[in-house]
Image (cartoon, rainbow, N blue to C red):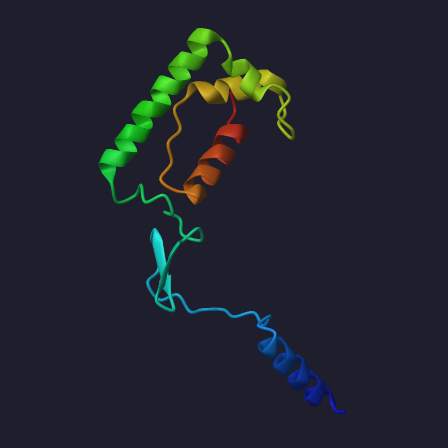
Length: 124
Protein backbone atom coordinates (compact mmCIF):
# COMPACT_ATOMS: atom_id res chain seq x y z
CA UNK A 1 0.00 0.00 0.00
CA UNK A 2 1.41 3.37 -0.97
CA UNK A 3 1.86 6.27 1.41
CA UNK A 4 -0.84 8.26 -0.39
CA UNK A 5 -3.27 5.35 -0.10
CA UNK A 6 -2.62 5.09 3.66
CA UNK A 7 -3.29 8.83 4.05
CA UNK A 8 -6.50 8.60 2.01
CA UNK A 9 -7.67 5.60 4.08
CA UNK A 10 -6.92 7.43 7.34
CA UNK A 11 -8.84 10.51 6.16
CA UNK A 12 -11.78 8.36 5.07
CA UNK A 13 -11.82 6.62 8.47
CA UNK A 14 -11.88 9.99 10.23
CA UNK A 15 -14.71 11.25 8.03
CA UNK A 16 -16.75 8.12 8.79
CA UNK A 17 -16.24 8.50 12.56
CA UNK A 18 -16.72 12.30 12.38
CA UNK A 19 -13.27 12.95 13.88
CA UNK A 20 -11.81 14.89 10.96
CA UNK A 21 -10.90 18.42 12.00
CA UNK A 22 -12.62 21.12 9.98
CA UNK A 23 -11.47 24.70 9.74
CA UNK A 24 -13.92 27.35 8.64
CA UNK A 25 -13.08 30.52 6.79
CA UNK A 26 -14.10 33.56 8.83
CA UNK A 27 -15.00 36.43 6.54
CA UNK A 28 -16.74 38.89 8.87
CA UNK A 29 -13.54 39.90 10.71
CA UNK A 30 -13.25 40.93 14.34
CA UNK A 31 -16.44 41.29 16.29
CA UNK A 32 -18.40 39.85 19.16
CA UNK A 33 -20.24 37.18 17.18
CA UNK A 34 -19.11 34.65 14.61
CA UNK A 35 -21.49 32.92 12.21
CA UNK A 36 -20.43 29.56 10.75
CA UNK A 37 -22.72 27.15 8.91
CA UNK A 38 -25.77 29.15 9.96
CA UNK A 39 -24.96 28.97 13.70
CA UNK A 40 -23.96 31.94 15.84
CA UNK A 41 -21.00 31.64 18.24
CA UNK A 42 -19.37 34.00 20.72
CA UNK A 43 -16.08 34.91 19.04
CA UNK A 44 -13.33 34.46 21.65
CA UNK A 45 -10.68 34.87 18.95
CA UNK A 46 -11.78 38.49 18.46
CA UNK A 47 -10.10 41.34 20.29
CA UNK A 48 -13.60 42.56 21.23
CA UNK A 49 -15.42 39.41 22.37
CA UNK A 50 -16.99 41.32 25.26
CA UNK A 51 -18.45 43.84 22.82
CA UNK A 52 -17.19 46.82 24.80
CA UNK A 53 -15.55 48.58 21.88
CA UNK A 54 -18.84 49.51 20.25
CA UNK A 55 -20.84 50.39 23.38
CA UNK A 56 -19.49 53.35 25.32
CA UNK A 57 -22.31 53.17 27.90
CA UNK A 58 -21.28 49.63 28.88
CA UNK A 59 -17.65 50.69 29.01
CA UNK A 60 -18.43 53.62 31.34
CA UNK A 61 -20.51 51.34 33.62
CA UNK A 62 -17.59 48.90 33.73
CA UNK A 63 -15.20 51.73 34.64
CA UNK A 64 -17.56 53.00 37.37
CA UNK A 65 -18.00 49.51 38.79
CA UNK A 66 -14.26 48.96 38.78
CA UNK A 67 -13.69 52.20 40.69
CA UNK A 68 -16.31 51.27 43.28
CA UNK A 69 -14.84 47.79 43.71
CA UNK A 70 -11.32 49.08 44.37
CA UNK A 71 -12.57 51.81 46.73
CA UNK A 72 -14.35 49.14 48.80
CA UNK A 73 -11.27 46.90 48.78
CA UNK A 74 -9.00 49.72 49.96
CA UNK A 75 -11.44 50.70 52.71
CA UNK A 76 -11.67 47.15 54.02
CA UNK A 77 -7.98 46.53 53.56
CA UNK A 78 -8.54 43.16 51.93
CA UNK A 79 -7.04 44.01 48.55
CA UNK A 80 -3.60 42.94 49.79
CA UNK A 81 -4.86 39.40 50.35
CA UNK A 82 -6.05 39.20 46.75
CA UNK A 83 -2.52 39.53 45.43
CA UNK A 84 -0.40 37.92 48.15
CA UNK A 85 1.80 35.16 46.84
CA UNK A 86 0.78 35.56 43.22
CA UNK A 87 2.93 33.11 41.25
CA UNK A 88 5.46 34.56 38.83
CA UNK A 89 5.23 38.13 40.14
CA UNK A 90 8.48 39.77 41.20
CA UNK A 91 8.48 42.27 44.01
CA UNK A 92 5.96 40.46 46.19
CA UNK A 93 2.72 41.95 47.43
CA UNK A 94 3.90 45.56 47.21
CA UNK A 95 4.30 45.44 43.45
CA UNK A 96 0.80 44.04 42.96
CA UNK A 97 -0.76 46.53 45.38
CA UNK A 98 0.61 49.47 43.40
CA UNK A 99 -0.90 48.00 40.26
CA UNK A 100 -4.26 47.45 41.92
CA UNK A 101 -4.64 51.11 42.89
CA UNK A 102 -4.97 52.23 39.27
CA UNK A 103 -8.21 51.61 37.45
CA UNK A 104 -7.56 49.44 34.43
CA UNK A 105 -10.49 48.89 32.07
CA UNK A 106 -9.66 47.41 28.70
CA UNK A 107 -11.92 46.90 25.71
CA UNK A 108 -10.41 43.55 24.81
CA UNK A 109 -8.31 40.68 26.05
CA UNK A 110 -5.47 41.74 23.76
CA UNK A 111 -5.50 45.27 25.18
CA UNK A 112 -5.66 43.87 28.72
CA UNK A 113 -2.60 41.73 28.05
CA UNK A 114 -0.70 44.71 26.66
CA UNK A 115 -1.77 46.95 29.53
CA UNK A 116 -1.03 44.31 32.15
CA UNK A 117 2.47 43.69 30.83
CA UNK A 118 3.10 47.42 30.65
CA UNK A 119 1.99 47.94 34.26
CA UNK A 120 4.02 44.98 35.51
CA UNK A 121 7.17 46.18 33.74
CA UNK A 122 6.94 49.93 34.29
CA UNK A 123 9.62 51.54 36.45
CA UNK A 124 8.54 53.10 39.73
